[in-house]
Image (cartoon, rainbow, N blue to C red; front, side, top):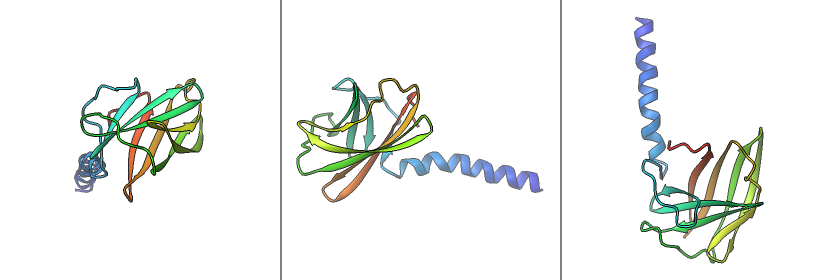
Length: 134
């Protein structure tokens, strides 16, 4: 009886976690072409594109049709875990994207959460290397 109850509880958690993850506005269930050569994540109702260039990261804010949205007056940050360390990187408007100083070019693995404040609400997108869809 205990074993079957435990099995049922574990099965419920395993099935509930993916559904719960989608309630947080991060939907990574289908790939998108990256207009700037980065990685695109759906953060309903937007898309975030993360581009790494040398010692800089760029985040493009895109609409549902993958068209650029303005960055002026908006702010954000990125929290990155790599090599056993966590770093916070401020993302500031820089032309058509948000930019921050961080070298991810040599990272073999990392996990990052990009947070952008848009019209008084915070939106978060998750990125990782190697890339994971969920």
